[in-house]
Image (cartoon, rainbow, N blue to C red; front, top):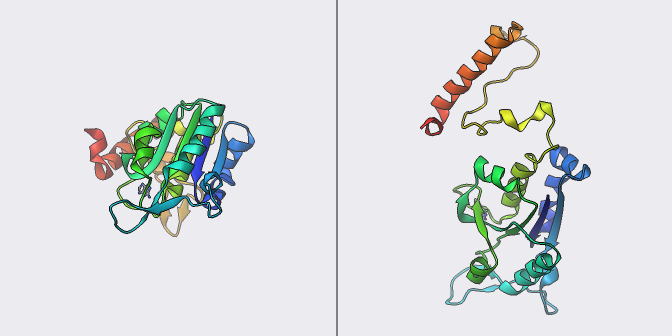
Length: 224
Ligand code: 6GU
């Protein structure tokens, strides 16, 4: 998979890809992530990427020209499955969307900033609009990092047995069961006996039961 991220703040997006699982996925060649500084596609000595909105009102709007130049250049080099605009008024990201996107070869992520982007970008250049939840961030960069993480960890070969995505919360509409590690007793707080029993059938039953109970308590909407 290849992910091209278009942003006015590329430095904000560097570190998420420089450690842990995402770094390993990149090092293994399972994904290529390219950051594009929108300012490099802006014309004039000011390299202007945003301007006041027509009709008046506070807040700057990202201009269509630099975005069009950047996306056109990328599209001339390869075809893209989706050109995604990260915006709080997009469809809300969930595990199903992450699963879908993980099957694609090439993605462009456009990070919004300021008051947003010229509507013509959304009408003409964008194929999908995604939000990461009902709250407002100062820009789409952190949302792009979150979306990338959710997608990249699903690519074949990124996770090993220990970090397998199959037992993730959400992957079967069930929250994950509680987990414990050593010591078996700490300040009088004990690990459930069954997990120490070595009885794999009993352990599996306990995990199913507690996962179901946790889902009922916290996310009853999943069970409907
Ligand atoms: Cl994708 N962008 C911004 N700016 N805020 C958000 C968001 C995206 N998703 C939730 N809040």
